[in-house]
Image 1: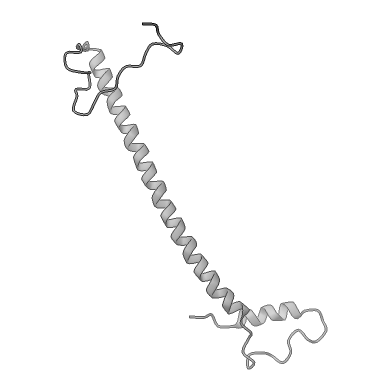
Image 2: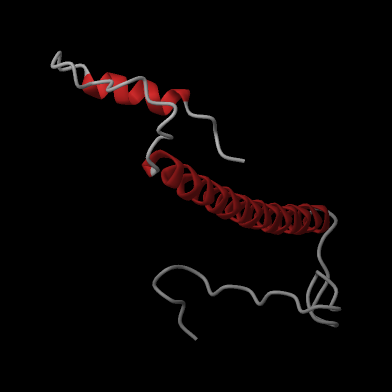
Length: 119
């Protein structure tokens, strides 16, 4: 059997319920190889747990972002209706912005700012 161009063939990963050293009767590891293999397996497991937690955290953040975006959208709709509504005739200060001084936009802004917020 020839080796692939990328190096030696990859070893078969262990199956669930199978000893980490390999299939039964597949040889034993030396006293130095066994702790190294155990450490490598523990690090691999920790990496999978870390990735899983990161995915869960990202999904949770997405859910919160969508909920916040929805709440902000509802508030924008509610306040845009409030801003577009004409002011009460009793609140108008007698023709603000109509005195020809080009400050009509500021007077309109003051009117809007003085309105009570909707409930």
